Image (cartoon, rainbow over all chains, first blue to last red; front, side, top):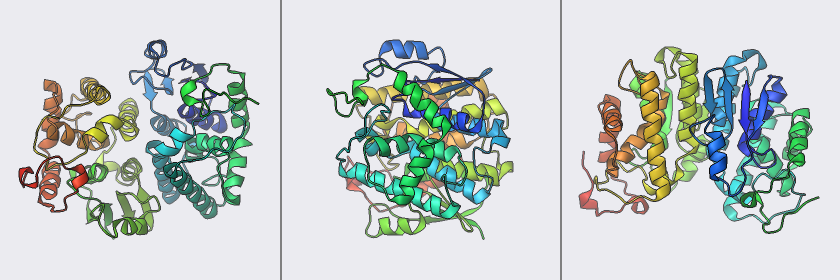
Length: 224
Length: 225
């Protein structure tokens, strides 16, 4: 299988299926197609069009099956590798995991806009608009609830597709110094301590591409 | 205990339409509770059922599922005979792909053409971004029908969760008199001929809750049941 992804530093959607597969031990080859600038530049779209009609990363290619859209990739993998338990085995927990994963998939636009994923950005607290603060509060309440109900260290006990969906949010909480309670902080540490996350982060730090649209402090580019 | 689906106004709540029509069109029995949106106490009422504070919400015993797509996945597992996803693995992957593309996408079209079943069918000028959304959706429908639609009039032949996800778009194309190709029109006709569609629409047109923030025309021009 091949996973077509964008820049590891910036592409939050790409991180989701990538970390799900790495953490679960599903073998694949990744192909990075850097965004370039500006985002949506014709060159990116042209190179991507060989793999996907939707013009977005990530794309999973498994023989003649092409799956674009993160959540569909996770569902495809969950079906193809049932022993990896990408979703919780318990029906009720699985329903809850899909609900929080879907909530992430279509939501939290304000926080995503205010705090683009930017792995190499040094940790600096950023003032958030009210709508982004409300997103952060909902996410923290959701994380805390899941951790309390299912015992941690991940949202539903062991790492699952719901954690993969929130992995970019974990990096945002970290990078932008978003305040969080002890339970959520423990969760952020657990995700960032995953070998799969460390591998992604190392890949991101090797990249030299700068995407102004995803630099919250532009025209300043903070670096360590 | 029967399943219960908590939904918003049938005239306006596009997210509510999705699981509702999926259940109705495939014969899954359920009770519904309508919580009129943007009314006094509606936020609190919704929060009683779901921590995310949004409709729709499916209640099945002590299981609560919020988010349309998660509800569809839950129903597909719980009622395998309803055939909510295509049975072929490749077709199913495609169905989920286009459903998730709908779930997180097409924001310009959704915001410029909010679902409003009672809106008189008057053409609205769309931004370039919304026009690009329309073009992409028409491509999705045409390609999916061509590759998988041979067995019927819907995207994968028979009605599936993917059609449920796109049902509100059919309503928007109709309400805003969007220019569409003949094949898009044929798909819209298939959707509109579903008894489930007609039942929802007729209930929506009978609703008297008017949300001025979504209305462009005087009340007397609204369509009636």
